[in-house]
Image (tube, rainbow over all chains, first blue to last red; front, side, top):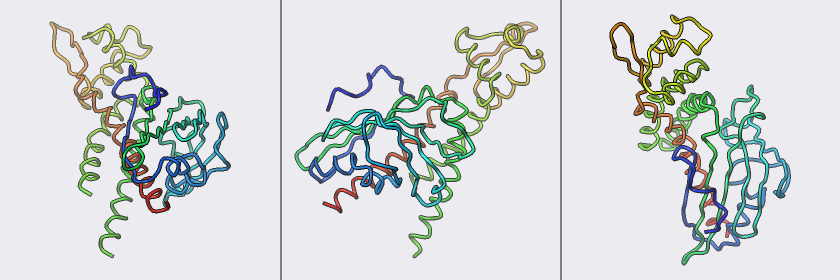
Length: 159
Length: 115
């Protein structure tokens, strides 16, 4: 693990952490994360250029039903094969809202070589700064999202 | 499917909590109760520009969402935070967390299927 993670002093409501192992060499996983085209494929977002540290970028969500959503992000740090981070507005899917003045969360990807592949750690932190009203909105919207997901699933299993 | 249904149920439960919090006066009231402990309607009204009746209504909204509870102390109603319900605000993270689970699964499938 690199020493670049946020200090653990943050509260339990401030961060999300995901850790998992993939059966692929670290260089392969690094490409899937650091190459903006590859990133966009699995993340379901079309990005307007390559990832460069400090660069402001715009992405277009390609996830069905969310194609109208644009994502503003700023690349923070790139450390080849081990660390990639960017900042964005979490769950900013209401196109009528101006999120630009709201606090951003930090998303970090960390890669480590393990016996049968690569350990991936994803951390999103800074949620405590997101206004409560905005968090409420994420709930309302996600309810609709879940309805859609349930329908997709039903279609899939019935086919 | 079962994980999603369970999560969706939790979301339904949390919506009234957030709806009650999505108001600047009510958020300030929560803030004061968190900082200064149990307070009477009189002292809660002092720092707010709206009427005592309006404050009472706001406190009742917070009470219905299970965020505060009140007791009578002589002729005064004293309100205090119900911290257990406030913890539901945490469930916002469950929403984003589930999205990261999906994204992680897609990343894993992507690198394993495209060597």
